[in-house]
Amino acid sequence: MIDIAIIHSQPIYRKGLSLLLKGGIDLNVIASAGNLREFLGQFKGKSIDVIIWDIPGHHALTPGAKILKECYPLSRLLVLVSSSNSVYAGLLETLGANAVLPADCHETELYQAILNIHRSYAPPPLSNHVQEPG
Image 1 (cartoon, helix red, strand yellow):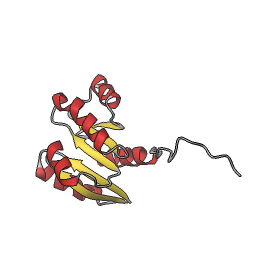
Image 2 (cartoon, helix red, strand yellow):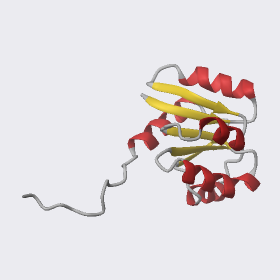
Image 3 (cartoon, rainbow, N blue to C red):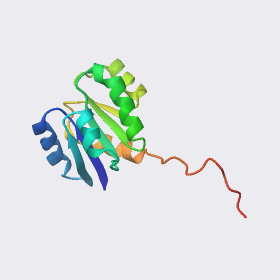
């Protein structure tokens, strides 16, 4: 089961995306919020595998991505953008997004992106020290 959080300003969009994600593959939407501040206030400390964030504009990107990565270092970040500008997508990935999709992508693209970034996750090592076998 992949635990998902959705951050989007429109409640009907969040509800629709939640319903869409319940079909077909093993996803569980466990958090939904209208903006980053609301999300952090309600769900801080909750274990989330993939955060889907539809950013309101590029002005929110840098501080928002940094805050999400600090508060959820083990979560994967999937950003939806209204522009398909490849330069913008590259900037998002530089700032910590694990995947970037156009907000009007097809549902199969969304599913595949969630699965791909979830599969690519490698947990950090538990220790910096390597023990030699005894």
